[in-house]
Length: 228
Image 1 (cartoon, rainbow, N blue to C red):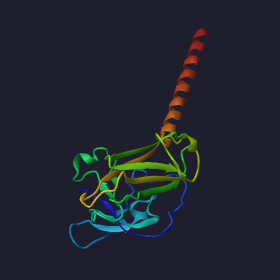
Image 2 (image 1 turned 90 degrees about the vertical axis):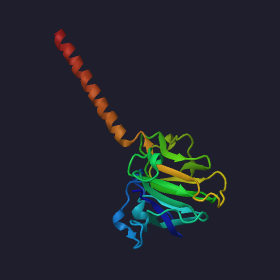
Image 3 (image 1 turned 90 degrees about the horizontal axis):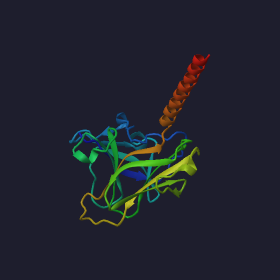
Image 4 (image 1 turned 45 degrees about the horizontal axis):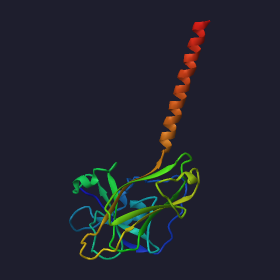
């Protein structure tokens, strides 16, 4: 079954500033227990707070923050503000989800020229040199990445390594305005955001380095004992 989260409505608000470690970078933390399901078929359709269905992130469009999202809903209409959905990889779209590393992927969809912005505030890992976005999109859409308002080119974030309370903005937009003939509009699929290398990689490198050092010390000690 394909599962989706779709923005239903919005209110004016300021995106939250949280700080600390970036969370939910793979969009897997969907709290389905907080969903209010609709009574009419098809089943498993409803809505809930963005903070419950997309924790850690905020979505803004034209300065408006989307605080309520739909769950398992198809896009409604071909005009209007962007639609954001979360789909499960075990769904109806086949190869579209072959790149997914988990259960969910985030979809952005719009016919409007004004971009939508996905945002979060957190600390950049001290050894991170790159930011990597696992995406699938067509030539009619684009993604731009910003840290504290500075656009990131070629994924290079080395100037921000180790900085705290950094605002990450992922701008999702159209290369040119679409028409109502584009019934469901172009899509951007965003599966995962990664800081490279990741903290787990640092730990593995450190363990590997200690193991290599231990081997070298044992080898030198063995050679010294043979000589004696």
